[in-house]
Length: 232
Image: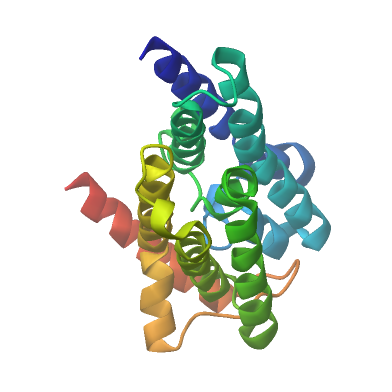
């Protein structure tokens, strides 16, 4: 139990490093929370500062999910121990929550897609491949990051159960299977404002290094509405 708490704590701290905010401040001289979509993530950095910095944030956000899951559990137990997979899942969940709810930014972070990518590359490489293929196909078709991300997390969950089969809820893999259900649902929930815009036909395609003023005003208004609702 103590091992799980330590792993969760360190993974959360790692996941909570707000690379998008830091790069926006240090390189661009902006507060990424006040421009573009206001999201503290790679897509918003890519839109406001260009694809190069968007990719940089994407890689860093993925690493802060990948490294805790890869490195922390082996420090506390052997790879063949019964709880090894469960400790990896704890690290995965903590890293994603760290990105979504970083203590340094008042618990208001990004949507977790890049960090989840890093996590699943370690947890389930085959399922992560399914997610990447789905993202690539949908993004090439629509050029909309949000819808590509939603399809990617759904593909991860489906591919996981296809690959693991009857062992899905065995004593070894039950926590991983719960993660494959819960993580996509959580990430889709974080995209709820994007889903509303998709339904309205207002979600814009990705354009690197360019902010659509109309889109920015619309999203800022929606963000203020969501913040007021959260405060209630």
